[in-house]
Length: 276
Image: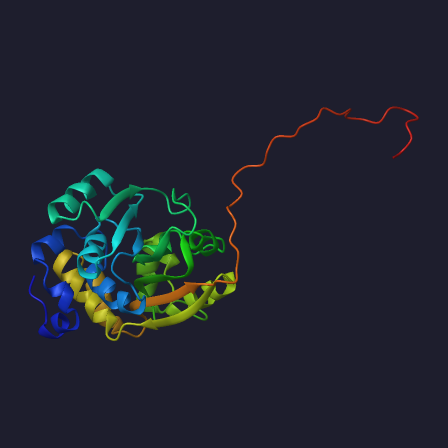
């Protein structure tokens, strides 16, 4: 994996990792190390902090977080095997600071206020676009703790119709309909009322990094590589959003069931029965 020198210079921490390790442990259409390195400086992480890496895939970002920032990480994913991730974590020498968890993001098994920070790298569109997600997720981070995401998305939302050169690509893959701009995520999170937004922006020349990564891990995906070239950064990029859980907002455990309290009553009034 030979990178453009300018890309390597932008991500010096990521550049230290063996290209075979990075490529073999890829779990999506973005280089998780690049996006993590771009995001983390805005989170205020300190050694020893507890971090939830939500939607960690093959846990590359989790290992990166533990090694580069001396934090303890819960590498949580629904689709990828925690046993396989543990092998990867152990081989990297971080089994004491990275813990693989199998869980749906909507039913996380953690205590309230447990984490100092939550990160999600190119995963939150799969579960985070509904109006309840952030309120539920924010319970797990301490008041004042940071929540940060970095992901593929749009430069701006489409006001009327999808540009012609993107229409077929978006129509072919339903999951792409959950992609949004940094501005959309900012507004979506602000509506929740549970966080203070600190940052919402796009990575300069993010489309070039997206294209470079595809050429490395999926060179056969010429349609998407060509699409990025024709788009030229007009609509496609990488975005990040950073917020902090508000200290003045109380977050309660979600309602998961209602206690049974059925009492048998007559179905119909009896003739002549007075109203009450």
